Image (cartoon, one colour):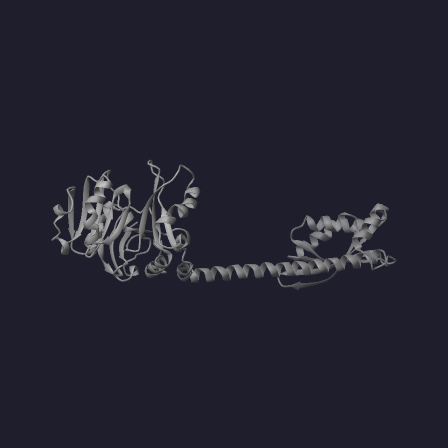
Length: 397
């Protein structure tokens, strides 16, 4: 997966970028007003921001949980800030072996403005780090970046800040001595090569000149890390659903169509099953009241049947034995289904309508009932679609 690394100069609203492969081999580099001009699908996007609005503080904290440390930061910073801590967005490093954390701060309004300047719906930025807190070096090593009239001084584990170049140079020696700096790595704009470093410090100075900010980014990248990612809490990257919806909208539309059709089909089946169930209930009532014409018709059928079972009334009824036989015969023949059943008490016979696949199935059913000792007559038959609807009259001989 290729990687897009950029430097956003918030002071001059300018973006410089590099594209590298998995092995950190440089593929492309350049300037751009909008990162979407160079972004490619699947790229990891990592950024560094240069702005005089950033402040960093090194704080001593007791050994405790990450949450408790974060809760204590506002109180520890109160005396170091102009205004309320609630007006700042801040992130912190983990506690080091000396019991200290590094905190990077920026006014919330400024952070919102800069994030909006970089925001693009085509992709999201995985990390964004203040340049002054991004330097990594060996023990005793400090870094300085000179971008024309503004500079950054990063004093290893002793804090960092951004200020006018003349101001930093004025206090440079004092800062380096107090931070126990033994070597200073300087990235310097070629336009400022007139600076006489020997007049500002006795510390060993290693200078790398750069032509422009793209050249600077290429040279400084090996010395940067993104441990203090500013994109946390309310500024954490959001999933851009609009992008995915645009890409997959036709697939989603097809999926929703299939799901809608499926649920319509299920609804239709439920409706049909309910209709069939209601039809069977009506047939059951008709059958019951044909067998017991003197029963009141405003009572629950299930309750009446339970009562008759308790009184052993149904056992004595011949038509129920016939119904049981009909059920067994149809259950054992998958090509035949029951369409309707009517009991004629006067003739002591049951009229059954069967739905079968072919006439051979009907003849098979007729043979089975004859073997069980029934008198059987076949009534009318008609074809309904791919099935045959036949009427038979059963009577116990």
